[in-house]
Amino acid sequence: MRVKELSEALGVEPIQPDFEDAEILGGYTSDLLSDVMAHATSGSVLITIQAHKNTVAVASLVGIPAIILANGRPVPEDMVEAAQKEGIAIFRSQETQFVLSGKLYTLLTSSQ
Amino acid sequence: MSGTIPLNTQESPPFLLDLIYRLKVKDVMTKEVITARKETPLRQIQRIMKEKWITGVPITDEEGKRIFGIISMDDIIRALDGGYIEDPAERWMSRNLIVLEEDMPLQFAISYLDKFRYGRFPVLNKDRELVGIITSRDIIVALLVEANKEVEKLEQRIVQPPSRPGEEAWLLYHVRKYDFENAGKASAGLKKLLMERNLDPKTLRRVSVAAYELEMNLVVHSDGGTLSFRIGKDRVEIEAKDKGPGIADVEKAMEEGFSTANEWIRSLGFGAGMGLPNAKRVSDEFTIDSKLGEGTTVRVVIYISPSSPS
Image 1: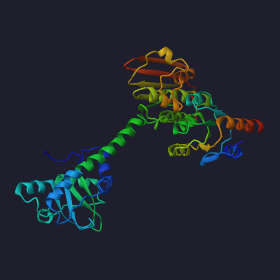
Image 2 (image 1 turned 120 degrees about the horizontal axis):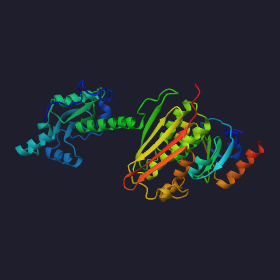
Image 3 (image 1 turned 180 degrees about the vertical axis):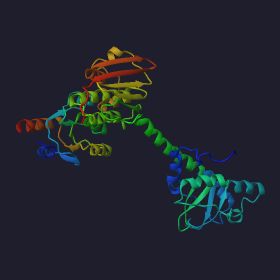
Image 4 (image 1 turned 135 degrees about the vertical axis):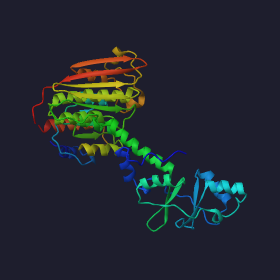
């Protein structure tokens, strides 16, 4: 499943739509950037509430193609710009990290 | 006052010469010009100068577009001395004006300051309308801003040009305390260079983790420092060196979950006490030296297999 298809299935709001439509290999949910750095695998979607541009830096280093911001967090403009530069997608959802993670897990395991 | 401004000479660095020809007068001038009318008493102009912290007031028509003359601080001093401070501006203003055109290079303004003993020059557009005023202060500020940008580029950028794959390369970045704006740039620079060298993804990931954690440590905990990367044939060396404050208990700092980060740093997702342990975990060699009150140096080595020619 690719980023675009996945975002439509999850019903999340596109914030930064200028991205590479990469294959999604997994998911990771965390607000600790060091933890993301250490444990998230390349090709994963990141579900987080850390809506700032440092999250984009971490995503880029780890090889995360899409970030989903939970709880409808406001997204600063410089985060969107940074993500655009890196070709990383940003989506936003009003749902919690728990609900989003559950949906993502179901989608990814059932599509295999 | 001694000689000429030592900027506009053949001996000046090319960067500076390039700059003073590239910048235009209109890029540097003050655009909100405070003007007075012909009939304005000198006394009132003196007050304007005091209030607005300026040393020259152009005398113009009502719209402030057509310039007839200028009253400078010198004229005011002479008026006070001569007892005619209540006279209208028209009677005492300098009429033979030296003006600049907005599209002239900044170099013209600098050489005018040299040639004519005026502290300011009115700036006109093609239609001879007053559009600004330029003082030596405006020029100093503009040059400092531009020079700072250049210095920043030099400090942040690569000290040696990145070499071709297979050759040794090193990168040096300056990292500032609490500079979350630029945090991650050094690690991203290293990753880019390593990707050009076709490093295998697993090793690339390890190098990225170590570089990023050490970079964030400098941002979060240090008083600023440098991050240097040395890429050899079979190893990548990362050194994070800061100017303080030093770690009180290094053993504790190496424990996962131990952190001295404050609340707002934690709210950004940093300072979870995983930085040093993460960096160590991905390293083949790891050393840390710290002295309280002096600073900390962390050295990490990660072995890489010699890259195959792309």
